[in-house]
Image (cartoon, rainbow, N blue to C red):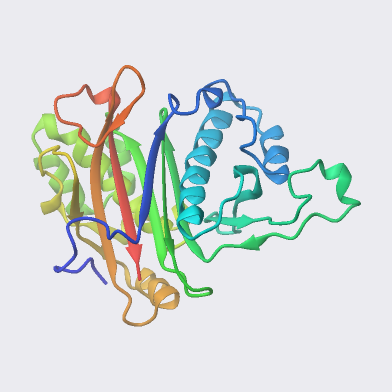
Length: 290
């Protein structure tokens, strides 16, 4: 399986997307939850996170996901407080969203008499990623249990060690990187890595498999750092083709896109990385298997 030649140049409107920075959620920068953001289960999870950087990333990811989910629900005719939405993870690590509509859902767990209010899982594919002060979330509606595979990955463009390239990239990808101009090398490596991560997230596998089972077409790596989305091509190992077919059927298609983001001194994210320092430039990739 490979990303088709006829892939659209931008993700379809049915994939809702949102990028947020710590500037959008200042409490997260301090490792604190904004009032009314978290459900009881999420509050308990946050209490178990002791590392400041992990708390910050997790909170910004939840903030971004819940804002996107609330907008989706409102467009569907339902308005819920953010704390009535829970973002959790399947055993595979893939995120999902559930809503609690009971009247006592936002009360203290002590008032539940030992029985938590029922939660309804939303029929959505959901993906979350974060990197150095930015978070990205995308969602797409579907019909359970056959939800589309959706994976997103956000990465800072930065130098990578040669051993990283040897360990995680195919020989063809390594050759393309070796042939790249020095100024393009860091961006090319980051696009490759981010595309692999997004695709493996869409398959609900994450980094549990060898990343060399995904091969990204080197011809797509050296596009200019222009604003907007551009398609990528990738080929899957037969084992991963089987996983995709189980997820989306024997006629499953794979679509893959990349975009560049930058962050200014105020922490504001924009969808262009042209002429900005590499320490505030990001690659964002998005994969759909349907």
